[in-house]
Length: 513
Image (spheres, rainbow, N blue to C red):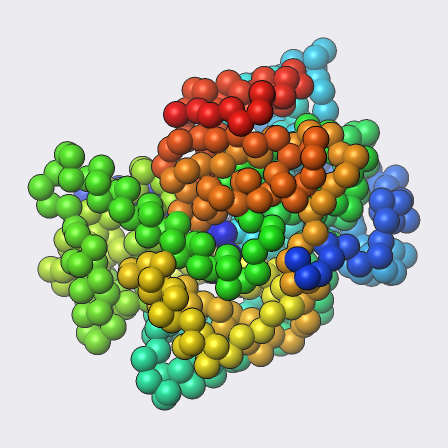
């Protein structure tokens, strides 16, 4: 939760799981000296071998094979990219891809490449799960997504076994004593050591700059002169870094659920704590208008304090701990679709039944119903720590607690201690904040959601500013949940479709409600 973890794939899988349950129960640079021509040294002439998609792997989250979108089948392929772009003729890494061809080939624009965020989310599994949302865009675009390097089938990062991860995510994430803080640091360092042991070969190369270079290689291999791009959450940061590295290659690009590129990890975590607190308040206000059993903030904080001392049964021999409950409550705020589950989950947990909040927490952590974990959170950590150079100590986290509690009485402590996620990490980070300045790029549509918990609304304005004059075009959606296009709002969809399909850029400061 410490970076903008947008669990779109989890939304589809979690809905089914919960229905079953409830029925039954910038100081740095974005680049490193490479230029727009670097990917020309890679294998730009390779031919992709498109074929039927296999069932999702464990690292992608498991489940069934990709279904058939309206009018055609999904195809999968593997792009070969340099593991190290400084040595483009050296070892390669496979980048898993998926596509569905445009339905109106006579008016086809090109490929529309999606990144759904995380970092750590599998685009190969997420895009088919939400294909209906992009039906209109598919008329003129081949819909394309991928597992970024270090994610899913693209050498997904592995750090611990499933049982170890169960214990890791259940453990105390808000230490109140020196002994608890020491224990947390030891667990974090053990996790990092596991990542190094199991995935150490790729850890130096999974950062966002290399992912951006992979996308430009992808663009060339797909035969597109320009990159047409749909980035959500962390995908907006990836898109911004791409625009910085390859401004002349930017086509029509949408940034939705926008990361603030000017924020360091402390500023980002503080903003996210406040964002989740805002979303929680919005949920409580809406809930009170339709129900008499809505939880209050005091009830939730009291429940979390109780769980810190005494977990409650969560089913199948597992307990709902404070950490898992906090993750579950946060997960429920990503979409209004989960609000009813939050109401029921808190009430059940107060009555010693933790099943619903545990299911929500599992979705946040990438745990399937079979007890197996995807690479979601391991990849998120690996990419974050490869990107950001900052490393924080337990003492620094403790000093920030009061500031975080002010931002959020519910999520503040949890977010303050999440600053330790890169403690003991074996790879140095590239930047203090990413450079997304993109002078000379085509206009990029940047959509901010006023009720977004994970990427607070202010980030959209910062991104538009950082992209530069004439590049960042800001648009506002006055709504709830993470992101805007998939919210169902007709105004947002109409404006975005007109931009991506016709090139019609919205007027300045357009607002949708």
